[in-house]
Image 1 (cartoon, rainbow, N blue to C red):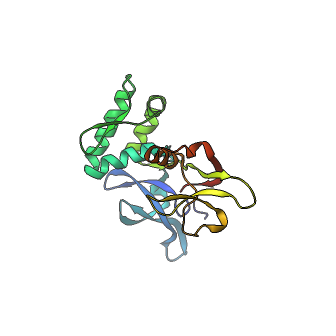
Image 2: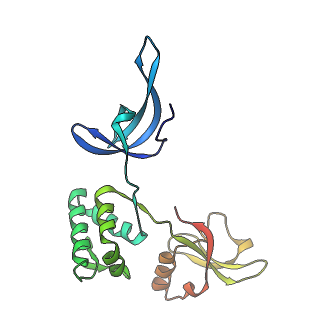
Image 3: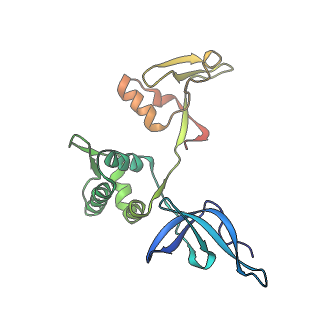
Length: 212
């Protein structure tokens, strides 16, 4: 028999009388009748860190994860960095719900100040039910486009290179070190412009690569 699920698929399983979400680690065959060598499909699952071997009839497809924007992931990580997961979930759910009633979307930073996520309010208002699912069930982060900062285009281009988190130089491509960074997200470029009073975003050219 062909397995319905493959390695890496998210699935639902009833475990200890509760509906749990797991990930398929491997597919197996279980002997159900030694005399006739009949077999049935089974899966080894990772369920909240536990490895569980279960027959196929006990496994159902789990809904696909919500794809959330990078700023949402940043906001969630800011909350979980200073709070336990359950409390961070409640806080984020609160801000998502109140945005649906006309409030601005924001998060509370570790120092107690309120940080508004630029351009996020309309997105949260339009997608709040998906974002609630994301908080409760998990989510994937939308891959962001990457950009090169092309100051002079030509055979040997002049690009902005990052030697480290604080040092950026415009150099010829032929003179750059392999370890220097030359592709940036929109957020990274605008953070550089804010930090150093530059306008590199005006020279941004999107590449085919996207961030993981």
